Image (cartoon, rainbow, N blue to C red; front, side):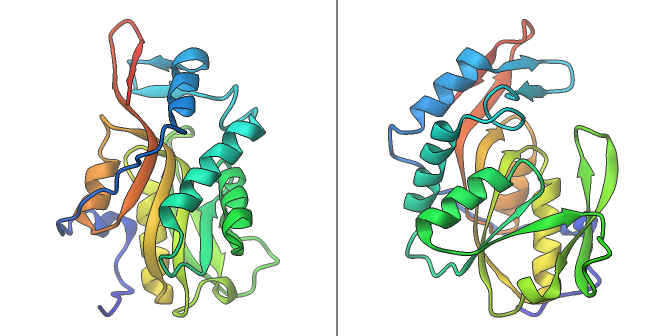
Length: 218
C-alpha cells in the first residue's frame, strides 16, 4: 500500500483495520508478571505503573535477557532484518533481542541531533513529561528495504507506536510486528495497534489498577 507522507501520528488514530493479537504460550514470562506484583507499584489516579526498580530505571539484566529470549522466540523466522526502538527505556530489551536473533538495532532519537544530516521526523507525546517531543531516525537506517520489529518497554495509549508507523510510512519500511514488556490493558494502545493491523505481543498486561492502588496483572 502506498504511503501517505502527509499523514501524522494524530491522523493515524482515525484509521481502522481488523487484527488479531499473537499470544505468548511460555511460562517464562510468569517471572515478569510476578516481579511486577512484587516490586512494582501503581497509582490509580492517572493510571501510572511504576517498575523503575527493575525495568526502566534500574535494570535487572537477567530478567531483561529472559524477556529478550521470549521476543526472539515470538518473532524469529518472520523475515525481520532490523530491530527498531525509541530512546531510552526500549534500548536494553531491543539490544538483547537483536543479539539473540543476530540483527542490527537502531533507536529513534528524541530531538534532532546535529550529527544527523538527513532524517525522517515525527513527534511523540510523552506520558511522563506531559509534552510533545520531536523524534527522528537517520534515513540511512530506515529504508524501503527494511522489515522491522519495534520493541519498547510500555504500551499505553500507543503514541510512540504511532510515531513509528508514521516514520515507516515516510521511509517505506514494513512493520512486521511490535513487542512490549508491559501493556496497560486499560489504556487505548492495544486497540490502536489492532485497528492499524499491527501484530504485537505484550509479555505482561496490567489489566486494571484498583482504587487501593493494587494491580491485576495477566
